[in-house]
Image (cartoon, rainbow, N blue to C red; front, top):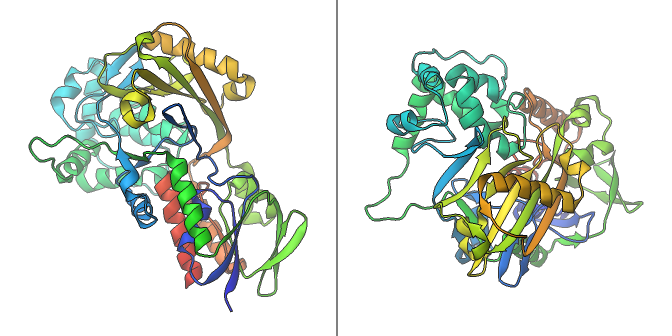
Length: 455
């Protein structure tokens, strides 16, 4: 007799867990009326616009492997490459050539950049001489980079890139939970810059005449097409996706769990919880899990604007820009979507996507959609030459959507995982609140949870 398994949440983690789970009678319990969670694609009049996550990173191959396995391999597209920019000191600056996540690996471009003062460049160069410090406990990403490269390099180069990934305050963001590879490079080579230069040397070399491949991947019909196909496949495999199903409690009973769904209890042998901690923390009162009661989140929004190309003067061969946090702006970044993803926009049109929301601010909560569009446009006018109003705009709010991996996070997560194994056998907690927020990372966590139940 097959075991009966409840997967709570029909986002990318929940659907992936169902795909990898074997020999089980699966109910996927989704509170809303659609699959995908934060992933949502808008398609109309030749536009393909991501309203949630924009893409996934290619080097984390599990998502490409899964897409290929479910028949979408030929639909995968790479982003167009081009110069990336940083907005700092009230001006757009090109990202120094050869830098990796803002960390310099080539001397000439770093010396020529105007993003840093002479003193800032000298301070960053001291990384060659500062001995690695043993990390006996977790530290913030900000503290690590301030020690290695100095305040100016952190604030004008590193922070705009790294903090945007997690929507986090870099001086609270856990190094151990997010970028432990930087510490490993530093310790292995005695210098962060030396370590990143070595990493660059080891990277696959482009063939002569070969066009550089973009580091991000997407689908011709959007990320929603991946979700729709994955939902179709798991249904074909026998899983039941139950929409409009609100879980209000999970009760441990003999040999399994009773899950209360729409006020009715159903027995399951195993449970995989993939929803955010802001949801599942209400179902447990165990002391080790109370960490999730006070784990912070950040609210963010995206503002998409479409223009006729005659309205936008943008001759830069680039993909967009990020913004240093010491800038007087509401937006934190902007993607030149029609340049980065040529499939997204009809000929003759320009698509811009601005990001709004920093840790601790309430701009997303305090403003309606019309106001957010005006605020984003006000900021974009500082950086670009845009005439007239957009032909249309779309505001997407992701309230309390970005879990904050603050210092000590991963150690607490590991403690909780051990506690769950000992006290809730066969009940898995996984997803973006735990080990990583990227789409491939969510798939990897789902696969790990499924394999643990597969035995």
